[in-house]
Length: 367
Image (cartoon, rainbow, N blue to C red):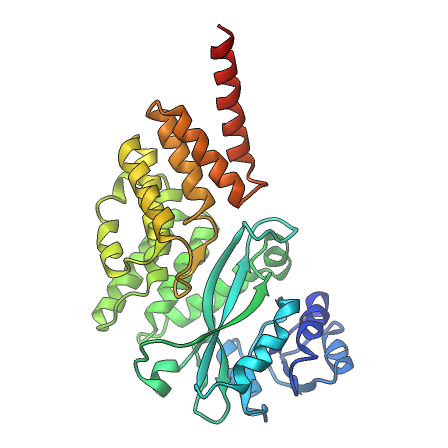
């Protein structure tokens, strides 16, 4: 891993993995806090490296110092799920694969972490040493999996979870991630041969700042540049586009354009959810209810797309219930709210909606 001024989170991260790894290699890029001391207290091999505004370079230094057969890479604001360490060891002991995926759970919103406020995806986190794997891109660095392996039909996912807290409100603001990211991304964009991923990540930052027009311009440019390079735009790029359109109040621009993205990624439940939300906001309640039913049918088991918790479960049930209320179907709406609460018992919106329906029904019974 690479660190800089991570004393608040580093101990938790290292404590979660220390019993299950054979060595810990930490590249420190100039900490002025207790990060180096904390790392050393866990027996880590600390490498001091001058920061060059390039996460991939620093990450590759860590790879160069790793001596094990397998490398697990992490960030300081992450944590291995406490009960998943044995599955990690067992998974690599029986695997002949060059690369394995783990389940990355990205929390968002206010503290404390809540499993209902999370994005999840199967992520490339376990690589065999000495196979030529390395990172590229100065920010939001990526493994060169295609360069090493070519096109691989399927990569095995271990039943191992890593919790990522870096995009929760408190952590994001304390690290000033947005300012840092924009500085690096805008510098990269000055290079004529910059990757389309730069436009995507810029769009994500503009979205976070609620600069929706800038976000839409960047994400559309990312799609165009992926296509111009002969590459299919990744599913996450389409997700960002339609999420931005919803946030910007452009529901009318989503359908039917989103159907093209759905044809490309027919198993991506978030795209169906955004389509359902657009129809709901436009007052097309029957069509929206049908789309939310599709979300429920798809579910959230496909872990190769960045999926927001609830789009194929409690959120879909709740909004289908909202549609059915508007359609004059209170009994069906109540059933949907109950289903949402069974999946997410602390879902306040669903509880309030159900309570309102029940009070209305009691009042009708008293007349």
